Amino acid sequence: MQTQMKEIQSYISEYNEKITASNAQQAVDVFFTNYSTWKNVVGYLVDGKDGEREYGIVLVIFSVAISEINPITEGIIDTLIKEVQEYEKKVKYMFEIKSALYGNLGFCWHKLGLLYDNMAIEAFKKYIFYQLTLSNHTSYTSLNCYSFRNCSKYLFQSLKNDTLNLSSPTKFNDIFDCPIIELMNNDDEVSKLIREAYLSGIKVACFVKNEKLPYSNNLDDTPILDDKKNKRDKKEYLNELMWAHYADSHKGICIKYKFPSNLTTTGSEDKDYAAYFKDVEYTSDLKKYSNQNSINLKDAFFAKGKSWKYENELRFLYYNPTNNNDYISLPILNCIEAVYFGVKCSDKDKQKIKKILKGKKCVSYKSQWIDNAMKELKEEKDIEFYQMKIDDKIFGAIKAVKVIK
View 1: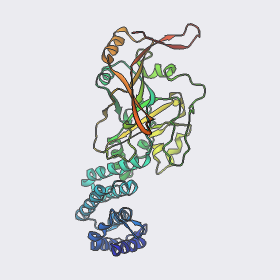
View 2: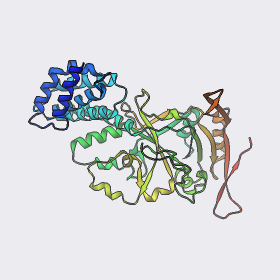
View 3: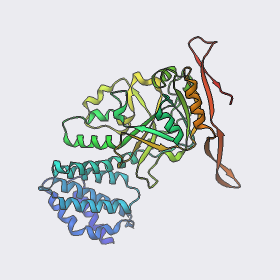
View 4: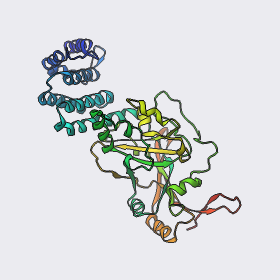
């Protein structure tokens, strides 16, 4: 195995980030001569080198090389697919390498012609999946946030089924939301395919949370503790603009959720989707995206114009490369902590919601040391109901009054 690792190191030294049209065929030929034995280093540490990483780099070089040879053939791409899928199955992490491999595979399919663009899109979906998996490493226990909703059949159905409804960014009311959608809406054919791959799999749910998340998704960032997004904000359920814009001018409701950590993924689980929370950041300079050729994931899905800052939006992003629907529902059993009825919410809707939620609990877990061991303690409580009313002591203000059952 030491011989194979030395050969791999020589291959990497000669070709890594050095592939051109003139040496691409040579790199392909060397790979075909040796890969059946080189792949044996996967899963081993050889001479201080991680076999998973080193052979992954070899595959990346090979994928770049075949994209440069002319003519490119379906047979060569089939070899790449087989090796990538085998590597993917054996190696649990190495998300950056996996993302690069699927990105290059998508480009290779595209080079074969329009008839192969569907194959390219499928490869780009996996590229995006690993990009998103790579970008998230934080989950949150008992995460509180709020959602303003109209009283509709979709709301009643989600309450009955204990589900969370998510939608494609193409359905958002802000036409400039998710800048990546427009950034990739250009004449570049590969960008169009990647855009389609994004839009087919990305689903989003939007919430209100006045405090920033306790940790960001950047490894080097320090913890954020009790940091309000806007210092003068009232409680989330007192946000009058949210009631007006998203809860049918107080005819709807506001739901307080307490989400468990298993709603998100951090890359350590064997799941076929990526999902995480992140605060939206507001900018007065959306025009900067007009001149960009690329965009980072933070700006891609979590940037909005400053006029929306009153929302204090917390966004839940979900990406499943196998899902092509505009809307999906995720199970969120026992996650509703409270319901606030709008000032104008009808008695009929209030009674219907109470009936649907009757007997349901809000369940959460907390870690605690017991008998010299860390144990998960289950906490269970009834869902609380509040009626929003005009505050007769403060003109222009509203208040929440607890409903006695």
